[in-house]
Length: 495
Ligand code: SAH
Ligand code: ZN
Ligand code: ZN
Ligand code: ZN
Ligand code: ZN
Image: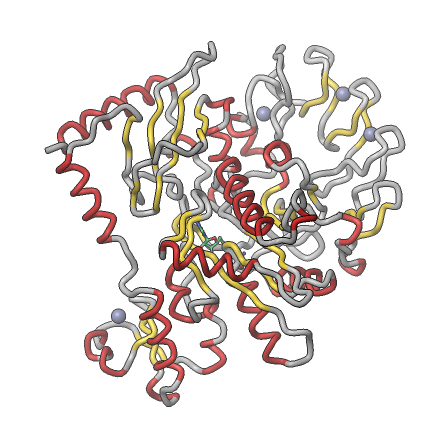
């Protein structure tokens, strides 16, 4: 999650969103993103293209200065590389395989754990030395349990919802009358929707999963899964695939569509917001003319400290108090039961008043704020809001004229509230450090970060917490030599 800040202006690297015209070069993850190093003085820095999805150069080594002349041979090599990274089967092949697999007898149904693949009988010999396991019909309906969660710390760690969170999401959406859920990076939600439909107890819902993890393609039909990159809005299956989403977004006979996205927390807010806006635009174009300025209902699941950044990009969104928690993340637990409160929240453009948070878990309705809040989030009469962001009870500072974290104290020198042991001194500018309140640095660079609430960050969802390991962020001197090294390497590779 901190990685995103690395690209923010505070660290001098900005994403320049594509504006049509110029096409970005492609890596195996689709069109790359254009980044710009911004120097303190504000003058334009040198721009370069890098992978949209991977923040570790070990996962995707693409790097190109914007003004680089790339040789024909290099382009061909790049294309070959991109081709070699494609899934072993096309979407259509996956579907045919799945139908065949489903018709096998129980003792013929095998899953190769090493290859993460449902095996057809004729393939079993080729996997005889691999770990293979039997698959029951009910396991087949729960791919998120069968598949090993990706644990690539930096780019694609998968954190799956607890039953508590996934049921809450689904109950809430169903309660609001949504009948179609576009699941962006939420395979477990899609799975739950399909399982529930089987129960025949509820109004059936449709779902479409958009995810970069193509292992999921083997469990779904072509109109249930698209291989998709949410950082550049890229459909790996081309137009046929984006047409699947388009068809899904069309609302017939009173159908109502909603999107739920749970991106990796290391993700960049700006490109994600851009992709979600493009989805909303596609949806809007399918609407009748009078709703030309309405936005598609969306929920974006992300840590609370990204609130300013998300609202900057999507001004119609609000952050809700609901704490989302994860099965395979021991530290991201709901406040009541877990050892630690989850920092993950829902950001949505659905009216907060309508999203009823469960009373038995400690949420209540604030009639002044007209939204449901966490029990410890007490309404402040002076600020006239329920101010807490992190789940703790905040307190009002009359000098700052706002509510602050309970651990903060007003500092005369800084003229604002901060942790008692914050690095003291004057700073100017906008918001201070999310962790200690200092104006001299951002949360990412906080020297006290390991002493407060972020102790286990290296385990957190994106994993890519350690900025020094970040491909695009290097401390000043090193960064230069890194770029120089890359340029040298590129030159050496160019044929
Ligand atoms: N909580 C969710 C899973 C979230 S983990 C659930 O239980 O369903 C993040 C998800 O986003 C994973 O499914 C991962 O495969 C997907 N993902 C990661 N990077 C992505 C990208 N660039 N584009 C699309 N999906 C991505
Ligand atoms: Zn195998
Ligand atoms: Zn207050
Ligand atoms: Zn204060
Ligand atoms: Zn700090």
